[in-house]
Amino acid sequence: MVRVAKSMTRSSLESRPLNHWRYHELLPIEPNEEAFAWPVGWTPIMDAPRLASWAGCRQLRVKDDGRNPTSSFKDRASSVGVLHAIQAKASRIACASTGNAASSLAGYAAMAGIPATIFVPQRAPEPKVAQLLIYGADVRRVRGTYAQAYDLCSAECSKHGWYNRNCAINPYLVEGKKTCGLEIAEQTAGREPDWVVISVGDGCTVAGVAKGLFQMKELGIIGRLPRVLGVQASGMDPVARAFETGDLPKDYSGHTLADSIDVPVPRNWRKAIKYVKATNGAMNRVTDEEITDAMKAAGRLAGIFAEPAAAASIAGVQRAVAEGLIGKGEDVLAVVTGNGLKDIKTAMAIAGQPTEVEPLNPASLREEGT
Ligand SMILES: *Cc1c(COP(=O)(O)O)cnc(C)c1O
Image: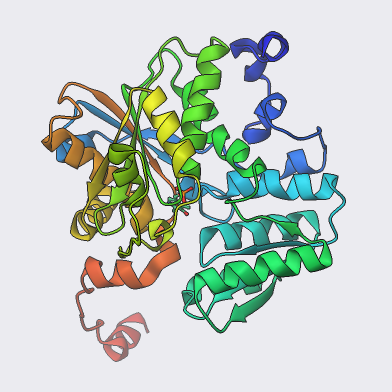
């Protein structure tokens, strides 16, 4: 850290490229010119005053990570994972996922020119499978559940020596996710928010963001550490429960329409809890209805199209203000982790229908024109 503090100062950062590789000293990778040209991160933070009034807090800023190249936060982890796979001389990279982790991995594998095999469960959503196929991944639809796809992926990786991008076992990925916290710190330095709010499924993301904030505090880039609020769906809340009791609930099952945080067996829950507590932070829960309300509010009041798991953070702000956890005078930054086009079915179900109208009479227009 002492060495990094010398090379990474607020002014030296100013001349660096506007992507997350600007923090390469803090990532567990060797510098690589080709990979450092891959776009990733440095997503915009925008002030959303009308959304702040809706949520009930003084200021609400939104960091839109849906603007990453494959439209989700997962690009931070995948870009680091793929670069690490190249440096480990892997012949192929694989993962099991139904959603953003897979499409992101397929995208970065395509940028790097390394083949990817993705194991998806039988019921993987069509738009996300389309994204995989367009990026040219070898997609294997496993006739079974996500857990079975995961087990098959692990077995094939050890059999063939493929590089495994499953978050549960790959420590490089939390380091990639950390860059969101590093960016929040640098982009808000001097005007740090009181709270940073992010949704939680497995727990790897919230842990990474908090770790990034800590490192920037340690480096002196920010003077004050924001508190971190992790938001879960009330129908799928094992990490929120573990936050309260110290352990995961036994034989847990549940469901939320926010597919990217519909994770009954979170693998990074200890790390998540440890980091959130270290920021003097908190966890809360929101219903599926609060999530879809927040999707509409973010679209209408701030021009941000969030997928359900991403809108959960905004719903979590409103809930936290209503419950007095976040003060009405406080300053909040919510991370939107994925773009709403990832889940068109939910968007169409809540958005309403267009108004059907007749065209002007085309025949009469032609007559007038001649
Ligand atoms: C993966 C994901 C999350 C949650 O990240 P975890 O590491 O599983 O906690 C939140 N939102 C979106 C859009 C995601 O893809």
